[in-house]
Length: 169
Image (cartoon, rainbow, N blue to C red; front, top):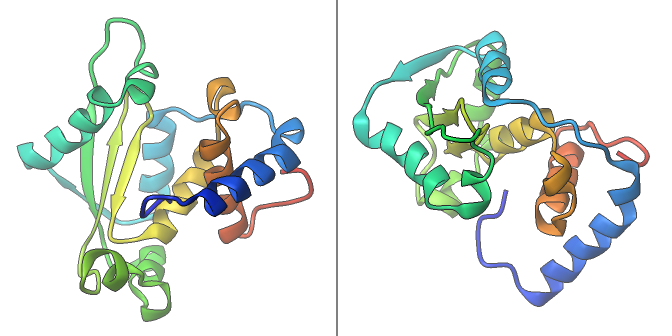
């Protein structure tokens, strides 16, 4: 998960990572519906119907040309927003050793929000870079993503963080 403006050194590291793994990677991107099914089957979620939160998901897709191109022709985003409950498997994201929100958000996470656009597959996470990385590793990349060294490097780092990086990815 990119949490700040990358410097030249970081960009260079991402390019090197992409070069090392790109030939061993193949398109494997899962849809927004598959992503939501994964979340619902692994974690306790409470759906939120706040129009502002739903609009944030839609706006993120529509205001980013790269993401908007992932929408099927003629389709609009189909946003869903959830709070990840501090229960069951989701507890790990609330443990102190997995909290990163003080650096990013200024305070420990008391609520982790997850937005998913069912149409494009876009997702957003507020309150846990670990959950974002898990979703990135699960979702995979499409052919276009594989040509983008920044996106591919984020995917490889996510696989690494969640313990799923093997050999040539």
